[in-house]
Length: 228
Image 1: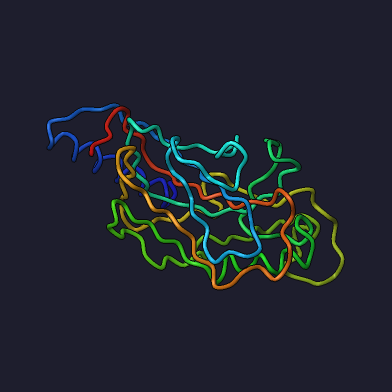
Image 2: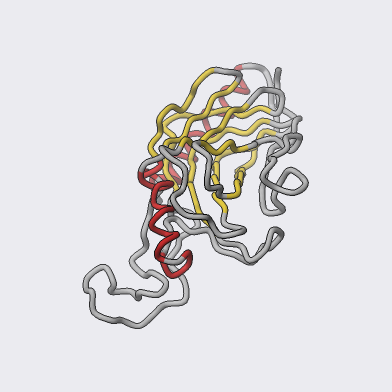
């Protein structure tokens, strides 16, 4: 069993125990939130919107069709997180991969070099009702480069010689780019969630038209359990 799975099991017991101590018994299920943001050139932070009722000005209609947000009646307990970068072919495409690092064969060499900022020199902050629960959490914790890399092949990390190309990066959806937050963070549909990734400077190049960041929060959904 992986360290992430152990963290989730322990967190589930803690969440159920906390509700039991409060005399409550909501349905608690394993779940994810997936919060997205278009990559922009002249910004120094990215605000992620966790609630279905919130509008992200970067997306037409206020949200992406591949996001998973929280209903205002529910609560979500974040245990793990992953930061990814993606290159959809259109604003509404659902046929694209999440990447745990910017591969030059996917984003071009120049763009990928600029995007390294997101995975090496940026920070994640999470505050709930103005109380800071995650502060200056380095996004380098999320960066994972697989042994098999698209355009380079399985032995590219060992040699600079030409090797057979692979079509996609190696990727484990349960592990790649996922790390523990170090605490259990309750995001309630009835509380203000301020989830922000700070970047040190604006991008030095223009991003791809539909390129985006995706922040995945993994944990547990408590149905109809939101509290003010």
